[in-house]
Length: 437
Image (cartoon, rainbow, N blue to C red; front, side):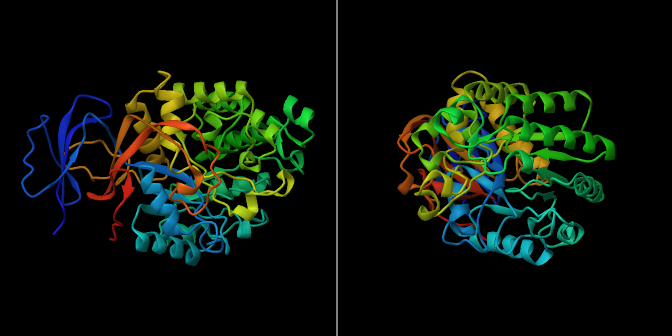
């Protein structure tokens, strides 16, 4: 028999307080505050906390199979639940690469067995991420994993012929190509954003145009073939303008920004601390302002974590030898609150849109995730205390890796509870129970 929960005096999307009853995997009742019958139910005192649809991440690296020393599906999804997520899309750059039906089904089944969040594998666009021939896109789409998002993330699909063919192919099953926009010839040996800081500290620069040139090419290709394009981890002011222009032409393009690109700048590279080494690199303060504005006006559709766990050996070394990437699942909501909500640029309803409804729609999982908080809807929810503050400690994160760029920082907001299909995976801020199908 499933557990019934009464969420007492919570505020859906930051609105007026209500009681919300979760039963049999759905939202069973929404009543006036203090009126829901708690007989036999587990009561969660909301105290005016904000209730959101469970967060959905379109860009997560779970590392399994192949790099279980950095993360596993179990540890990564447990971290996702702690961060308020109920679904993640797992990137394909595993070992072996998720470029066949067999590998994506393996990742999907690992997600089902772990049970902390729903795991939706992303399939590789090209075999081995090598950019030479298309992977088994149709077979992955038809597999038990029902893949609808394809990406060579970590590498760019730089060949325009291959990119065109991929866009044409995924049209047949309503898929989307999620492009890692990085012109490889313009970024050979690049270590950080090309600009004043790179010149002063002597690290090889990564020009903004390397990202913008690929986005410009690909929105035109998407328009030409009438297909869906998603831009991963957009990071420059110029990229925002290109996506804005493409949308004004009616091109079917969506874009994401990471939490770290909403708040951190290339000035941090002056520390030579490889924690801040990431792909695409941290940009300038002007770029940060541009991506915030793009998220606020809807040019950028979603926030996606690009959660990229690494072992200590891969990050605790000199900058040039270090791996690119940062963890992000457990801090994403707090960074969005700090940069967008507390500054008045987004409401909590907007947060639900960019961290839940839109990523669920782009990933075509919106039949179960990113749903309205209404009676009869799936009870995939997260409860947030926006008045709380916390200091991030890398070693205390749920993820198996400690490479957070926010270590020592005080961030606002705390995930109090997460519910997957009506069962609590997190209570009082602590993961408590996986939910198996």
